[in-house]
Length: 121
Ligand code: AMP
Image (cartoon, rainbow, N blue to C red; front, side):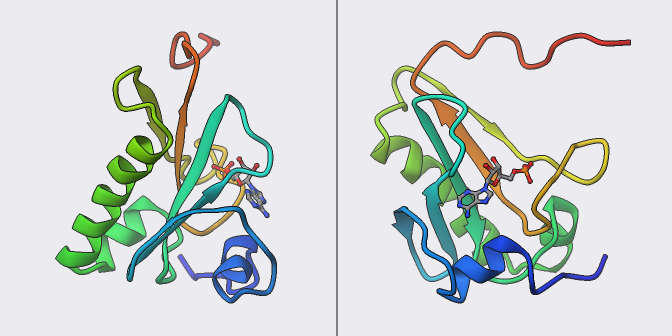
């Protein structure tokens, strides 16, 4: 699992391409998804380079992990979906259909989201 420094979120973190900032602290950056799937669709990413959740939980410090989880709640509050509800998704690897190889949580809400997945055999 080698981290690819040329991925789009690494470029956002280096300030090479812009993002619509929602929240930031010393370990995390949260910004609007460029192709929102609902009224609220924000991505929360760690500032340090982790490919996915497996990599993050293996290498990140306890403080980093706590800050990352708290950032998710803070973003939900900022976007006004804490009371109405929302979904937190992280796509991981091939079967997870992960497109960007830098760990990110999708925070999605603002409307009833329906079942988690369409059932397919
Ligand atoms: P995933 O399939 O879980 O890797 O999700 C990648 C997400 O990144 C998708 O929802 C894209 O719409 C989003 N995305 C790709 N490029 C950008 C960008 N430059 N700014 C914000 N979101 C992006």
